[in-house]
Length: 380
Image (cartoon, rainbow, N blue to C red; front, side, top):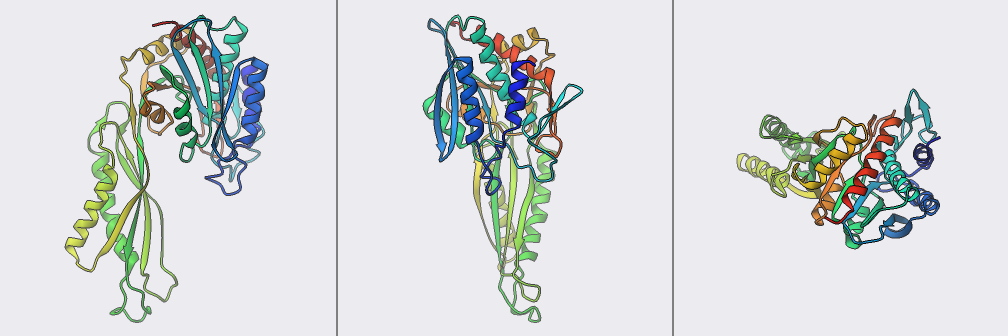
């Protein structure tokens, strides 16, 4: 069996569900050890960086004999949960597809970039420069791994090997998580004059948010990632059936696109609440932004995506420039001054109950990364 596909199956078989998403999950420690062992077999310098207690980034480095540029290959080693899946950690191959949790998102990309390091070292190494293979934790929650990575490691360019169907993605969306709380007044359910219904008041907020979403999705579209959007994610409130609820809590997600200002989602919600308060002096509500990540874009004519397109096509991929709807660690790298693109294998079932990756595409991805590293790391 090809060493890259063997490694992919080994990685799928390791439970690396993110403990920040699923209480009691095992996290990334075991998969980090397996990657360290693989780096040892390949013969690359290996470094551990603890991004959070018991949650280490693993970084491998291939050094060329002379000065040149540094290319970083970056992928996350955590996964989302497995509730509802049947044997999620037993990799199965059928008709060229490899199934299992993380097969597409994104242990296939991690296997491809480690496989690229193997091919390079086994064929004489780099002519010049440096290749960094960064396997980071926690992308599926708050990206503490990528945040830690950029405090220590720098590069002239980076490829994040998220699944892109072998297309070169130069842009992706961002997001804001916003919490809204409406206030009411607790009272016995038989005393409507005494009570104020916080849940009913949240209904007004939801109606305004629905209108905002319609406006966003019919408004300005980015040429690669489409329009902004929002949705209501979680809601809770009330204490018992026979009481007026004194509070209601809503959490929403606002997806942002390149070119929108930082904090736009929070500003929109604040405007909605101000409008509702102007209509009814008894309406009381507050909002706060819980967490946000910026959208990302690199110019398609930048030398990194241009070089990657050439390498991908040389490896047999019908690659074009595109954008992705989901957020990735490329925004963290880009924000730290490392020009970044996305390029990864083909598959389906992202976060779903049946997840798979096309084995042939993993090898094509690997081969394109080998070609890119050899070309990019030479002195500019």
